[in-house]
Structures are given as structure tokens and as C-alpha cells.
Picture 1 (cartoon, helix red, strand yellow):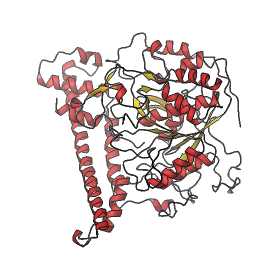
Picture 2 (picture 1 turned 90 degrees about the vertical axis):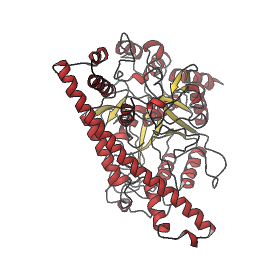
Picture 3 (picture 1 turned 90 degrees about the horizontal axis):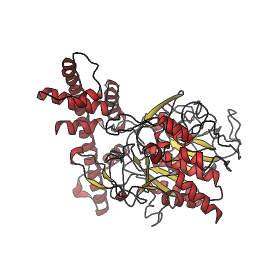
Picture 4 (picture 1 turned 60 degrees about the vertical axis):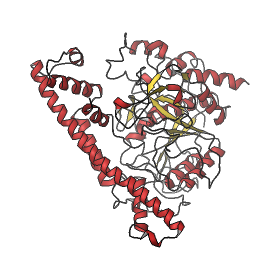
Length: 563
């Protein structure tokens, strides 16, 4: 999922309105004991600024953190069992660091391909695809890094066709397309204006932060004040009250000069690449872009120029467990198939469709898709690929999106619903995942997450998830991009221990065995002023009404496998 504008932007509004390898699960380090040791003795979610690493694996009854109960599942349910199958999970993303110390032993290997010999040994159409394939690279080894947004591509194409034409000369069919062009043009111009306003907001936040720091430094006589000091501060002036509110928010959301600089850089890149109709890097790939049925193009560089997002996703799914370093993935006995199709910008429908087909045709059991966009001009091409996965018993897991929107009314593509040109039905082996946070109060649903009582199947932890990053690094990140692999990892774990279950049964088990919070009231994610956000029952935001639970899902899988 593309980088999103962080909660920092909401602050601007609120501030101024205020082959099967068996792998026995190691018990050298008891997960249950680890939970009890790592969890704070007492938890005050109101004052906690950052959760412990790995909180998403924890069990609420033991730690009070609303994790997925995977640690306790390994300890109590799987300690005396061995996985019966190696499960392959395709990660369609921006790239994966296959040499990472916590991933190198779980990367998928195409055993029918001889590495580096420049030949297509297995005759699948892709040369030297040892760990997967890159659909946004050229045969010469060059790669697409930045690309435009789909809205920009639509605007450019339609403007060339209708920008200079007079509507009075149109036929009825041409007039319909012209009206669509006007709609796209309006959406595009709104985004440009929004981008400009966002930059102004960030500058305002930066100035407010500097002003607040100066006021507080003078008040405390030095800069060593803490978050607790600010909470206990009783302002004696309007300036001091302003400084207190600003710095509390800054501390709560980890806003520092680096984050502000990154936000400015992101806006600059959006303007230079994403919303620039004159930018088109597709020549790098060298395919016949207008031929949507073309499948064999790209290169075997599955890392690409920026594998940070995909590496983080891969680690959540299957980072090596109990190896004494890094993090534990949700799934044991998993292999990560790296497929690069997502640039810094919007992924293209042709590449997404081919990535899905590659995953299916090369043995993936599960496909994780932590990406999405608001427009899909060649949806039929993607739908045919989804149908291909459905037909071949491959489970597809998709992040619901970071737009804080209701996907019952506003689509985030790809979707499981086929276009009318394909079928009136939908993909059956599909899970759409929203994101929850580690806070059990009204902030339980991540403030950026899309939701939908009919279109989002379930939720999973997606805020402050600690996982792998390129060059043997680790980092907290957030997004439905992080929630989706939590569910993909859960599905992989079930498949590894209960290989007799079909993808349809695994999907059913996950949805029917979530943790329910029927009485929980939450703030409904919204792009508007946070102070005007609505409250709703958590159960109204997804199909299952709950959060993925590994422990309950494994118990259900055990029972279903005996039938």
C-alpha cells in the first residue's frame, strides 16, 4: 500500500480547531513466558506512547494487549505438533530483501530454475526466476521506482482525447466519455489543491512545534521535561496552554524533525512523479503496455530500488521463528515468493494481473496484496486473474486500504467483486482486512483504516507493527498493509498444520473464529476533522465483526480436519 500521509496531517486540522520440510516448533523460549516477561507490569494505554515489540502476537487475557493470540497458540496448541506442509505465500509488493538475516531461510526457491545461467530452465516464460519475478523492471536490469497515480494516468489519457474538443460536436457516446473526462479532471485538480494545502499544514505544524519548544524550554528552564511533566502542567497563560497541547500531541505521535522532513519529501515526490501527467517511466519496462494480455516481460530483480515495504510485509508473515534474532513471523514452515509489481505510485492493472497469475502458476498457496488504489481502468484484466486464483484454490488476502473510507460505498481496488463484463459474482477465496491498534479504547480501530460492514471481512493489528526492513534492520510501521500479512500468516499457519483443509475452509475458519468486541464503541475512521468523527459499534465495521484470532482458528481447524 502506498505511503500515506500520517496522522500528522490530521493534527493540522485539530490544532487550529481546538517439497515438505518438517520443522518442529522450538520451545527453547516459551512464547507464554515471553509474553509475561515482555508485557509491562501495569498498562496505562492513555499515557503509553509506543507498544512493546511483538505485541500483535500476544493474548489479551494475559497481557491486556489485543493481539492475535499466536504466542499462546504455539505454546499450548502446537508444542507437540509438527507442520505437515511447507506453505508458499506470494508477496506482491514493491520488493523484498531476500538476503535479510531473518528472512533468508524462508525465501521461496524455484527448484526447477538454475540460478544465473540466463535460461528459462523450467519453461515458465521467466528467465532465472529463482525467488519470484519483477513485472516493473526491464530486461536490461533497470527498474521502475516512481510511477504516476492511476488518476494522473486517466487524466493524461482523457485530456489528450477530449481536452480540446467542443462538447456540442459529440455523439451521445462521446458525450458520456467527455463527462467522465470532466469528472476525472475535477478529481485531479482537487488532488493538486489538496497537495498544496497539505504542504502548508506541515509547515504550520513545524512552526508550531518550534514555538512550543521555545515556550516550554523557557518554562522548565531546560529541555529535560517529560511527557508526564506536560500532563501534570497547569498552564498559567494562553501561550503555555498552546505549548502544552502542541507538545503532548507531538510526543504522542512521534512527530520530530525527521518525520516532518519525510512528509515534505513525500509531497515533493507526489508532485514530481505521482501527480505529474508528463512523467511516464513505462519505457523502462519495455513491454507493449496497451497489450493487456501480454505476460512475459520484466526481470528477476525481486528487491528493486526500494524493498522496504515488501520486506516489512514478508517479515510479518514468516520471519524465521525462535532463531534468537529479529522478530517472529506469524507462520512457521512458510516460504515467501517475492513478486514485484508495486512502485512508489499506483500499481498498474496489467502488472497486478500478471503478478497474480505468476503466483498461482508457480505454486503459491496464498497471495498477500498490501496495495490498493481508487481507480482501475482495466479491472477486467485483474478480475480474470482473480478468477484464475479462485479456480486453483489459492487464498487471496488484501489490505482494505488507508483512506479512512467506507468501502461499501467507495471502492479500493482490486476488489473481490467482478466487473459485469466478467461475471455478476465475486471471488470466493478473498479476505479484505482492516487495521486495529493496540489501544483498547475508542482508538481501537486505526484512524486511517478503511472499513465496510459488507466489504471488509475482518480486522487485524496494523498499528506499530515491528518487523523486518532491508539491510538487516527492523522497524515499527503501520497501515492495512501490515494487517493483511497478519491474516495471510494466520492462513499459512493453518495450512501448514492442516494441509487437508481447502483454501475455502481456511477462509471460513478465519472469519468464523475472530475475537468479538460486541460492546466496543470506536471512532469511525474519517478524513475530516478528528474532533467531528463519529462513534459506532466495532461490530458495524466488518463482515465478521471481529479481529483475527490464531488460537481460536487453530482449534477450529483441528475440529474441521477430523470431520
